Image 1 (cartoon, rainbow, N blue to C red):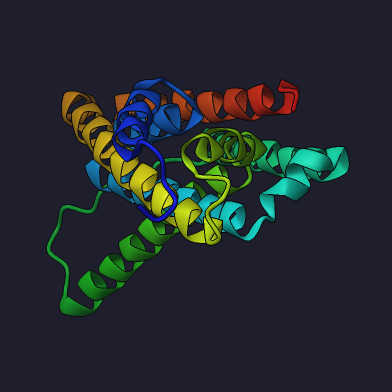
Image 2: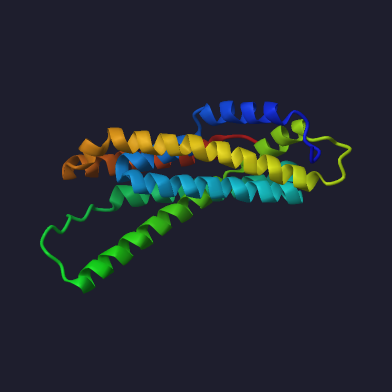
Length: 219
């Protein structure tokens, strides 16, 4: 169907791959532990959106450029690594602001709500960029997906899109579980301002570590 061979096998393989700890999983867990459930969920949406970007690039054949061009691969890798390190440094130097517990008027509540919304949008964008600028994901799509696509099928782009969407859905379900569990078990820790600050610092170190790991990986 749609040029896909052994779709059930692909779903099972995709689920097993999602269960394998990787950069995306660690990113989501770190966000959830340090910044709570909502931040974790927005991170999940960002990561999954990044998967959809890679799906589209693979379907259009643009990911082949990364596979065949060492320069393009290195450029994307350096951008991704630098961005992760930037996020890490930002979390290390940012001082947590105390919560305001006194009564606020409507205008201040609106302003605070808008500020929180902007923060979560930023977390979402960071998740998208973190996944998109990981060239290993693009190469994985090129290596894994064709194994389940009939080479004689005339519309392989459609096959890539269907497999990519399937992989994104299975990834979404698993990542949601990670975010919810991680935020739940760390909730009591975040309620302590001192511990919350420490968690943010640890998260910054983890992001820098992820950036260095990406930088040292070979294509």
